[in-house]
Length: 225
Image: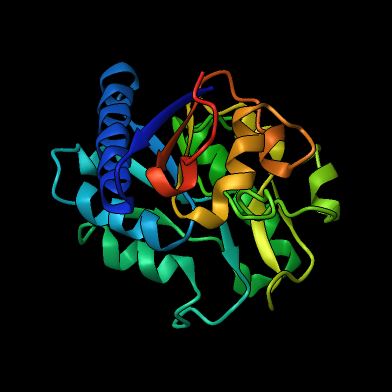
């Protein structure tokens, strides 16, 4: 697990954007198209706004969602709304159909297969990290943690909403996974993630190539060896 330390949340977002752009360009060069799955949160929206000004073969990139809240499409908590506003106009974004209830997970699994193959292998996955060690919407104690027979599933209610989320099989099959982690509240979870602690949901992401970009507040005191 590689750990890159940035001096601020803004710099971490800029590093994430540069990394994402490099990975997307490489995927297009190697395979003719690229897929990226993106999580929610304020720092990622900054990252995507920086990415929007970079040289990327936008017409060959498909953006997927790592997770989504079951709320109205115009709700400020809706990740898709922020994806639309952060990426360049005309970007290809595949929204999670949370309005469709349980069948929506199967429908999104079908979209994943069309975009990234069967089983789906996404080129680059961006993840966040919660103070409780959750990543995507894989939350401690939720039955979704044990879902291994499908790439997309629903969670129980968490912080007021049920969530649709990618599951471990699709995260672990990704070509590259990186976490963008900022803020002192993430310190304890980050320390456990970097140590490979499978006792938190984030520690069970085992993609072959993984790294963490964290700001100085999140990484303070964490061993970088």
